[in-house]
Length: 182
Image (cartoon, rainbow, N blue to C red; front, side):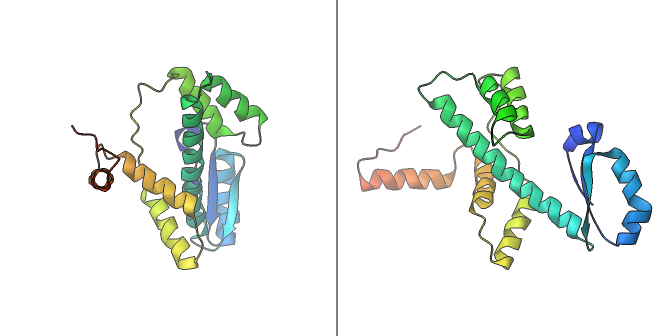
């Protein structure tokens, strides 16, 4: 059974993705899971392993959504315009084609800390997105957004990567792009 919703889901109704024997699901699990799931939040997905696989792919899609929201809000924050990012996120969460819970959460975050000054830009990553990338390679399915979002999360954990130092030194060596020194 794949489960989504985090702490919020545990308190207000989770999402369950259930694989396995259909009779076991129907007779032993469905009623109990539906009683603690959010509305329409209990899905029978088929054979054993399908619920876990769906949850793994769900996590990877979430990485892509979060990455694009982060990039979009950075563009808004750095632009010449004086956006109230809380209001932007709140409005988009209700009225736009990209509306949804992640934008509601962004509005909450901007409400608490409008410039996100109290947050360090280090983003954790679980193994499931790496497994998703492995699966995509095995199936021959290109997933550039998901792959890039995982790599950016890994990069966020580095203060001053050796790779970036090599690239900066190469630009310096080529000429015209002086490397910054500590």
